[in-house]
Length: 413
Image 1 (cartoon, rainbow, N blue to C red):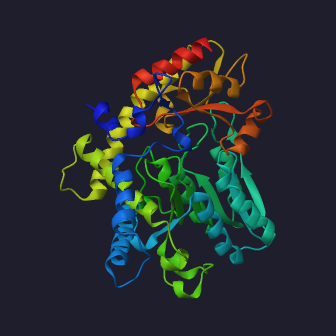
Image 2 (spheres, helix red, strand yellow):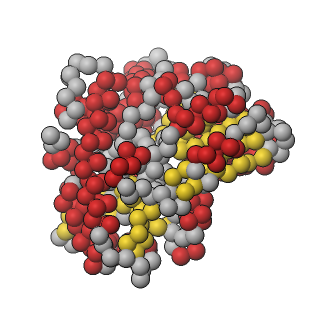
Image 3 (cartoon, rainbow, N blue to C red):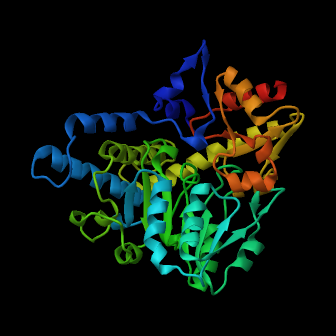
């Protein structure tokens, strides 16, 4: 059994109320609430370890240890090695930095495949690279009924000219989980790089970069209960070979050459703590041994979280399907729910997404409206001119009772 009250006790923000009513956080795809161990780790760093790195004195050495711990934690989260983990401001800035480093390898004969299902952070860095280098961008289409990738169309775009395929692990708008393993295989057959945006998938499921065999993958910790810090995985041979934009003292060895300048040390302390929290969920909710390797605990955590989130998703989708005038954008067939996560976007007849979001906000139910930077999808669906979508994002600290509160307001709103 998933002990939801034990989980919620880790998140002080969930105890907030406004005007006498408790807050319901369904804005999670834009950023989850932060676990207390993360807050504690960041505070502890600022009190006990606040110094720059590579010094011979105590606080500097503590800073080095904190960063090393967090780097190992991210490696465990992704199934990577520590020298393949790069810290940065967020996924977007890391992707732009990587696109600059890759740019010299592209020319007018090359093609880049992006998708209309992706967040713009996994589109524009590659579109702008193509513009700078004279390369061609190919756009993979979506199935408008299910908001899933048109896999046949995407496959048809990959050929001997393809230099890079960029795709999201999961859609931040429709909740679709993409078959990235298959797409990576197609790209490898063509000799193309693969870049996976795993920002939206990371709070919901296990990532194994070695099993995927992707070239690059990016996440952001503020989507999985931590601070605003991004991290990038890259295959060792790529990170060592590519020319990073750096200052000379940073050296020319990964990961240091990619992290030139002072990092967000307190944020990185929080990243390590956020992943330790996930591992603890694996012990407390997933039954992993307390002395098991952290990677095993993380695997158990995602199994327990996925099972619980499936219950919430079922409640939400079934309730929305019987609400008058509500259209769900994404997979609704229960037999296909293994291809989606608990992020659900809707529109309701007679109101705009913004109006409905305000009705929910008046009841202290927090959701996002608009395009969520999934601009290409919003345009393709034809909803961008009329306000985009309303997005409900569930994570493992939400409850069935909160879902029922939302369904009642949507049904009456």
